[in-house]
Amino acid sequence: MFIFKAVILGVVQGLTEFLPISSSGHLVITSELLNFHHEGITFEIFLHLGTLCAVLWVYRRDLQKMIRSLFVSSAMRGSDPVLAEAFRWNLYIVLATLPAVVAGLFIKDMIDAIFDNILVTFSMLLVTGVLMLLTKKVTERETLLGPANSLLIGTAQAMAIMPGLSRSGSTIFAGMMLGLKRETAARFSFIMSIPAILGAVVLDLRGMLDAPPSLDEFSFIIAGTIASAISGYFAIMLLLKMVRRGRLDLFGYYCFLVSGVGFLWYFTR
Image (cartoon, rainbow, N blue to C red; front, side, top):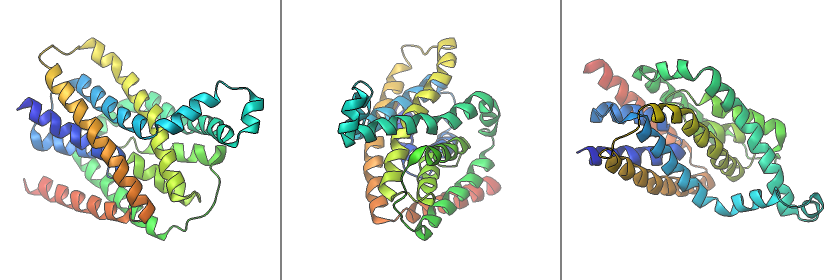
């Protein structure tokens, strides 16, 4: 039974980490429905590592260029537009990560307390739904990413620490509002999730070391990790398809549905 629940939570984590419907919100709701609250900090860390594997695989070529651009001469970067852009993206990712670092260091404990209030989750899902519906109203332009826009998108990512407020939805919406092309906003959102996920893992490592899992627990931990990696890959592919079609609003309707059902369940149980 524990393995079954772990796989369910892994699939939920993988799908919702990248789809604009809030991973934190769905994990809170799913854990509540499955009555599965004692999986521990190690389980959460490994679920995040599973989704990290998914985004690393999908964007492996972009990441290879970004890494390579750090180890070539400035003259070579100047003569190669692809490497020059990859190098700039390294800088943009660093800038976009700064707000999340500040949020993680200074307000993480307060946000952790909010996670215990499922009504906050349902409310923030409504906000996510509104953002996704508003994407239909945004006119696509040819604005360049740039340092200032990177920092603003990073601020949107930091705000998504709230349970129920989608990280991918907030950052893609912010990018589109700033004038980025939809696919550029989505690509930047996914790649900037890499340091964000790593940061979440590092922040939680102390808790894992203080209470390491037993050998018996590793079976459902590994099952959940594999499930999150596989579902995360398909979630990225699905979202990219929806971004190209300009149909992010469909996720908004879904958020409204989950939020409405959640409020109904809470007040009638």
